[in-house]
Image 1 (cartoon, helix red, strand yellow):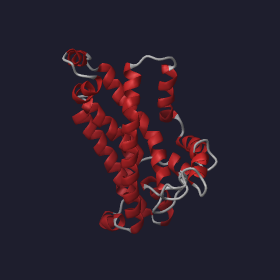
Image 2 (tube, one colour):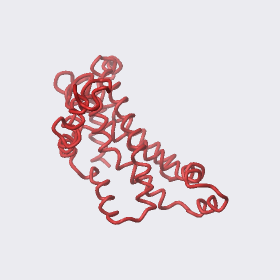
Image 3 (tube, helix red, strand yellow):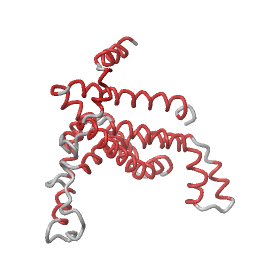
Image 4 (cartoon, one colour):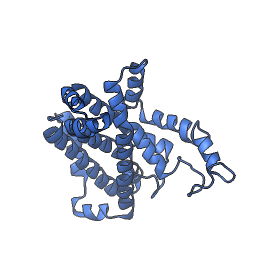
Length: 256
């Protein structure tokens, strides 16, 4: 307990409580807070949109290579975030497998040049931050929801089918309400993981103030130039993490 508690106590003692609100109100802190909120919420929406059908498929459908697919989904949990950022560069940069063709297609003379916003580029952009955060946060949602789908009593779905309900109606009116605690828990875990992402973000999207500099990146940059602001932002991340853990433990995880 002391091993876990002492660093946190040290962080709390290091904070300048008399100027905490002023530090959090600085332009650097406000930009990082705003960007982190936007990107983490965007990553959470993507995680739910991509993760829910993926979790349902892994829990309910048998197909060749299912074990490999599950391992691929769980890989970002153990993959070093910097390596994840390098992998994202290989896929979504201007010379990547997907990023290159998309950039060419949305440039002048390309098939998708009519799209607003000019050439589509993910690196060093807010969109790139959302992609990086989704890459590391998505597994948390998938494994939480898949476990709930596997453990739920499927007889309720069978009864709904015998009463004439189609698959989509059964999913909306029976399955989703039964696994709702796990859906909420998975989404909150994904959001918290996205909020604290550092390695993949700085590798893939860079550290540009107002565009890609989220809270963790702001802490890293300000630690030498304005340490009091870095500590204040660290306290924000600490408070959010502690709140998520306590809320999920007492309200959702026990019901999931």
